[in-house]
Image (cartoon, rainbow, N blue to C red; front, side, top):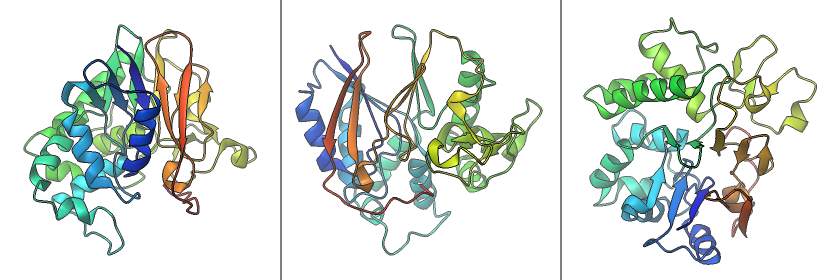
Amino acid sequence: MAIYAIGDVQGCYSELCRLLEKIEFDSAHDTLWFCGDLVNRGPESLQTLKFAKSLGDSAVCVLGNHDLHLLALHHGIHKVRDTSHLQQVLDSPERDELMAWLQGLPLLHYDEIHKSLLVHAGIHPGWGLSKAQKFAAEAEAALHGEKAVKYLTNMYGNTPKKWSDDLSGSQRLRLITNIFTRMRYFTAGGSLEFGVAGSPRQNLRNGLTPWFQMEATLREDVRVLFGHWSTLPVGCYGRCFALDGGCVWGGHMVALRIDFEAEDWFFVDSYTRRPVDTAS
């Protein structure tokens, strides 16, 4: 049995299928770990959702910021842009079933056997494993419960930017959600910077530090698998593994086999050539 962590799909279902052919994925024996952002900018968000849901226990999925935005659209919190590929999901007769499945997904998945933590954007450097699990559970309880619409309504925004255990209410949930689904950089003063999305090389002189280069509280034997950052070169950064190959922008769809010690990466080229959106 093999376990493959998959980078952001973003509705690029055709490339995902080619990648699964390349790794000879067998849903009867293998498991896929999706790091979030199953949907949005690519042309096949509906097919991607239907496929991921159909895998049942053969897939582990965590939520990304684009998945959460789709849920907000589903609940009428925002309107869909005319050019959005998400309209196909909202027009589908399977909409309610798919959205119920998506809304029930976690923000974080941890596998003790493989000492691997799957998340969309990253783990706050001040959080150990137990804190990360606790805070993810807080946001998940709001999303999965009767106050889901309130949670989705209040999740938008870039403040607060510094974590404190004393945060409460919508501000606490917003920052937890932003850390798990939107985090990239910290400022020299220790605040999160959500307005910058370029690669670390582009930001060498502006005093920003990638979250995975900050001094970490997380146990040293735990590796972190994350996506979200299409301008960050795919690869290993210490014990953090960047999986977003920017397929939707003309890059690659990426898989990393994680059930044995040696790194085993797999790539397929994108069908698409689009200008990179640094606000993604």
